[in-house]
Structures are given as structure tokens and as C-alpha cells.
Image (cartoon, rainbow, N blue to C red; front, side):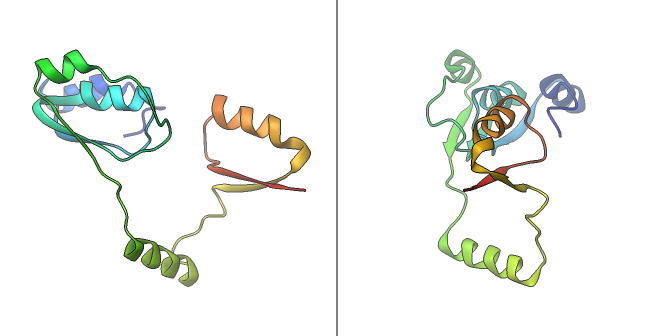
Length: 129
């Protein structure tokens, strides 16, 4: 589900008959996405946190406690996963060029602002001196 295209929690609640999901995975790691995962999870369900966008951020503790939601961290990848990913990149099975932009170093400030305030298709900006 794309949370930029729809209101995530009501959509999940509707799709699950109001119950919520058994398991929600936050691969972003932002305060809002963590809270959405908790809100979309059924009582006694599980939320997995693997996104590292914000190192520290608030969590809806009262909601987690009252609905007995299990919250678990997952680092998500191992050295073997990196080797596999490098192999897929080398074979051309995965393309990163649509997500990466090169820009002059002098444009670093505006690109940083754009990445924060206008998230979209670009994930990384390589600043070239």
C-alpha cells in the first residue's frame, strides 16, 4: 500500500473488517510510519521495525500496551544478503539508476531540502564536486 496515495490506517481497517493486520512491517523508520503500523495492527498483533530513517522517535506506547501489541526490531539483512544483492546488480537484474541522481556539489542544499520536503522517486543524490 502506498501511504502517499491513500489514508493507510482506514484502508487497512476496512480491508480487514475493522480488525487490523496480524503483522505490520515498518521499513521506513519515521515517526509517522511507526505510528501507522501500530494503528493498523490488530490487538495482540506484531509490529516489526526495520527502517532506520529516524534513530530516535516517539511511539504510541499507551496504544501498544492497551492492545498488547508486540514490537520487535529486525536488522533485515546479513553479509550473505549483501553478496546476493551485489550479484543481482552485477547481472542487471536490479537497476538503481532510476532512484539515484548526480548533482553538482553547489546544489547540495536544495537537493537536501527536496529529499526532506518532497519525497518521491529519488532515494539518493550523489554530489559531484
